[in-house]
Structure formats: structure tokens, C-alpha cells
Length: 274
Image (tube, rainbow, N blue to C red; front, side, top):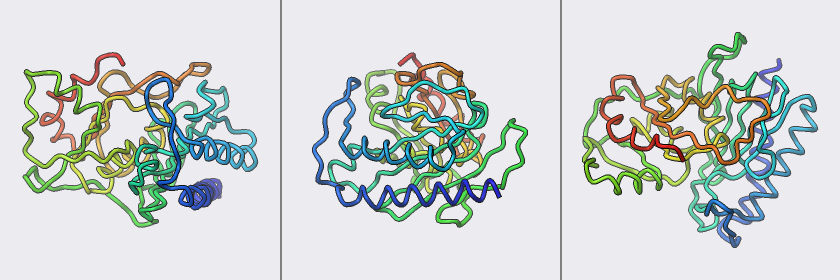
């Protein structure tokens, strides 16, 4: 019953917040944060709305969010919230942006839910890992099971980069960007990684994702059978009392272990300290 409640709550609150955000989609003026990324009043409103909803339903759970709470709390259960992943897309009227909720047990994600309001897609998944918990099994999009692709490398298959990974590789003349498949740049870290979980792409790399970018996708990607390859250090478990605002986790995710050698030679360049 606990897990059914968790799943239903995550779907309901992300859809409710998403409906509100759609009213301002493409119309708000962003400002710059200290790291150069954009933030809008919608990010801040959604952060507050999600924190309030979680605190009301699960008052004993901890919280860590992109916009306000950056220090990992001492509770066994903690929600990590990205209230609006893809703020640039949101502000510019590009429909690929989402709301991300990850639930951690003793510092490691065991459940994730990511809702993309304009796309009409909601992903969720459960991953017990080494937690010792008994969980439901699987990864889902709109409640239908998803799984990584079994396709072979070909010019008709896809690999996703982020903006910063492309920039980093362009500054390394010894590395060729020639790949045996097509390249995409989706502009949203969660959707980048979830596209692998759902079989749309064979791999993806993120150069500077923060913990709120990967907490929900960690559970879903693993549940779908993908391989997560940290390029600098393991992201989980998180440490109680540590501030995660400035810490990045360069990451490569591939649909299958046999694909890793194809992408690791250039991906490891992204693992230098952020």
C-alpha cells in the first residue's frame, strides 16, 4: 500500500503543478543564477508548491530541492525535487521540459517520477538496488512498461549529448566526434536519460548534472535495464549534512554494457572536476 500511495501521489502532484506551469509556458522572462543557468518565477513557484505538498502528505520525510534546500537531511526517506527541468526550453516555448521527483531511502533513490506536461508523458520506476527493501518491479511511461533497446549500432540509431558535453569535446582536438549513429541534443537532462530507458536512444551523456537532475532518473533507468556509468564519482548514497548545490555528476548511460566501449573514450573527458 505504501508504494501505491507514493506512486499515485507523485503522479497527482506533478500533473497538478504541470497544469499550472503550462499556463505560463513560453511567456515568462528568465533571470540568470550564479552558475549562468536560467531561473524563472515558475521554477520558484513550483519548488514551493511541491515542497508544501510533500510536507503535508509525508511530514516525516526529508526534502532537497534545486531552488531552496540543498543540504541532505538526516531522515531515512528523502524527496529530491527538480521543480522545472528544462527551464531554457520552458522560457523559450520549446515543449520539452518536466517536473522531477525522486524518493531516496538512506541516501539512494528507490523511486522516481518525471512528468512532461506538454508532451503528455509521465515516467516512473522502482529500483531496490542494495536497499534491502521489497519494491514493485519495473519502469513505466504512462503506466505502460518500458525497456531499453536491443538494437545494434547503426546510422539510424540515436545517441544524446548535452550542451556542455558538446562544448567540452569541441575543445579537445584529439577526440573525434564521429559516431556510428545519429546524434541528438534534447536540452533536458531527465529526458535525455529517460529516452535511453524507454528504448528511444542507445545512450546519452550529461557533463554537469546535479543531484536533482539524476535522482528520479536513477531509479527509472536502472529499472529499465540500462547501465549507468559515473564519469567522476558515484553519486549515491548521499551524505547527511552535505550541501549539494554546486556538485556535478558527469554521467554516461548506455542501453547495454556492450555499448560502453563505443562511448567511453570521449565520455571520460567529461569526468574532470566541475
